[in-house]
Image 1 (cartoon, helix red, strand yellow):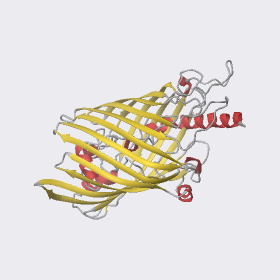
Image 2 (cartoon, one colour):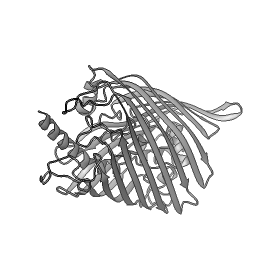
Image 3 (cartoon, rainbow, N blue to C red):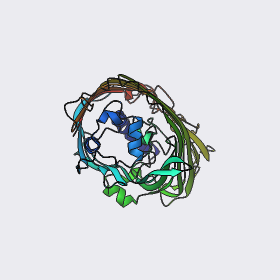
Image 4 (cartoon, one colour):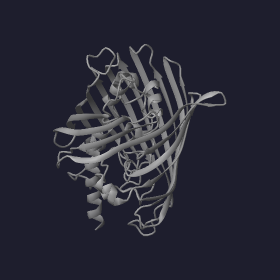
Length: 444
């Protein structure tokens, strides 16, 4: 039975890893509905005119509840995105798919209410399109307040993905650029049993003097029946959460031609997984720094580094296959991501990411080597012809890109990462998980 379980685990990991490069490539994009609403080009909010990183103007638009408008009548708060992908894995068959079809309900409702809702259809090539409710961020905001003689903004965000609503958009949930993991943090959407899209919560946030940002909120996991109805498998249930607190604090400074920020993030919760079992205590604490050189928008450089550490007090300490071998009662996991992007004339760009996930050695929990360590890199080149002030259209956008996703280490090893018997044809090295992708996205 143990062998069968181990085989199924490897199979699930293999299919999951095959999808990870595509998952990493699909970041938050510019939504044409916002451009129509504000009368501004997508490049005003996104340096690359199609996302993902936000400019200072884009950050203010997000904190303002997506409510800015050009005052030229009511616009339809909706957009559609289609993505086609050619995937060439290092091992396995290549594929050409219409991989994603999305509907965005995004924009202003009133002067104080706005939001973002993404309904996503995925095609993994093995079945029909699979519909899911992706990210949700609904906001109520009070602007132009005065506090101690300084400008202030206060708002409430109702969302289903801790960190997605962050204005700096550097956290993993806001970029979908968290490192692939064997056992990652709760704030990393690449982790198994992730909170992303399977919880609901509300945060109170404030911006003071245009530089100081703070947020405090809480989350509860959705009932498993609701997760299923929203398009998510029951096997990915994050468990039952209680006493959950999410906090975010950041200093940001806009120098007009440059921007810098430094932030802290934290999440703590008691979790029962499975829901009928005992509870474990999980605490995530992290920091992030970002830098943007915007200049005259001819040459744009963006850098972001995120480091999140998770401490776990496990609910159980299972025995290993060897007598006397017992799992640890406590553990630590680290997720780190560094991304550097260069964009020329808001149209041509190259982005490089280094993604690392490490954890406490535990031979019982992390088969076969006791190490959950994973290291990978992604290299992306892209072209976005539209979305600028001088583009011939403001109602549509296009992005063509190529990405190489490369694993240096998985399961704590570069060779035979799943521990197959020596000489077995089932031996899988870290480089066998690599993939090259070509994708085209159009939004209108």
